[in-house]
Length: 173
Image (cartoon, rainbow, N blue to C red; front, side, top):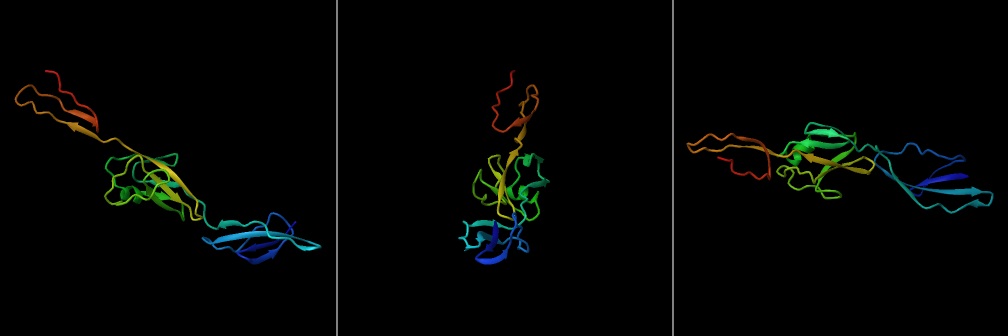
């Protein structure tokens, strides 16, 4: 039976039931727990350490004003949005923090006021207890309207909704 619980080498209490709930812990603090059994011969050795950080566990994107939200991921981010614009438009779980990172497991994007969001970037949300989750970003393809000058000849209609990187061939005469 469990009879002694200790955190950070300070005896908390002696108990005789399992499970035990530690109370009066402080949010954001890290605690190391050990347990030892006691019988008629005396106390046994403490167990291996179990570390826990006390805090809220929410690490979700709750809403966005930039693009849309689907399954926790951000979709339809308008082409040309900066990282800081996207970041400021995100609402996340209470107590959590957010960062736009360069890719899965990547570092924070540099120059967030001027860097344009790409679909290879991720949103990292870190809960108050230190756990984190990464979410995908999908950027809308930029589209353009192409106008032609007929140079006095037959008018040529504009091309609309041309996606960046498309090949345009000369219209037939």
